[in-house]
Length: 470
Image (cartoon, rainbow, N blue to C red; front, top):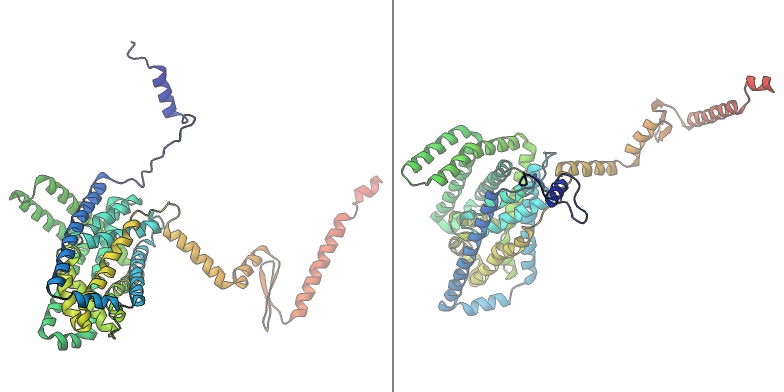
């Protein structure tokens, strides 16, 4: 019996748990909407582990590049070229790349702006885009970017399925944008590439074809989820049966194939149904890519060298396709070889210094800028859809002026509103009437005053009952 009795301390704890919080203690609230699963946290930590390995790897690459300059006798040319750099053009290149980040955030905004109940805020999306910039450069084949972005979307309030679908849809549009941009550049600059590089141009065509196949596979996954599920399940069973895939990974991939594929498909079809937003997102993505592909042109101008902007843009597009095809952090190896081959004739003796500056602006500086932005979080509140509707409503009211919304409010309240013109429109107690001039308006005003004075006099006059009483 003694064991069944609760001590006073235990009773107080129970009462405190059920009732109001104890004095001096702050009640804690846990938001289920913004909770993050352990799997998402583990994936984010794994991405950070890949980053640490990449930093060590890039340290060895930088050392190898320095030794290459020393042993090839290019140190003097390198130092001389750096000494003559126009810093103003480098700053312009940095600003250009900052717009790459801005357009990336805007593309995410356009992806969710139609949903009035989406909890993701602007600073959440800034964190998501910064994570993409950071992990895209510091993990092999950009493998760490999707888990890190999904983690931050779930932290903002989306479910794992919704976050994965949104991230996948954005990835499809980004990859498609790379293919579209490369196609446009090849159409308008194919003659230059063939005259300059000859049959080697076929490598660029092959890289473009590889991008088309990659985007086509993504679109097939989005548009035809059932065959993808069937093929995926067969491949998983085959790999597990031959012990190529452990049971733990088999269960994880099986869940992804049978749940996430449908979520990806639904999200993409929902986005594709809104054609205007899809086209706007694609246009913003092309502008974003253009900001990155134009960086070699800014570096060239910093050396005082004239260059064709469109040729630099097309060469930057081909270079990015080559970097994406190399499964190393930042496309290491492909970036060096591709830059030397595509821009060697443009840079000349400034090639080594130009590559270092371009790599610093396109690779190292974005990592340093994105790192502190990954921790940004919105405080909640209204969705971006409702905020945009409110801002748009205010803009329309401001553009319309007092003659627009103000006139409608006055008409709703009653009274007289005059709109100037040859034939003046008079609104009396909400009824519009056409008059020929200002004299009729004045007469109506005087009649209204007379009626008000008569009514006031009638109310102040003594009634018949009061007279008899007197």
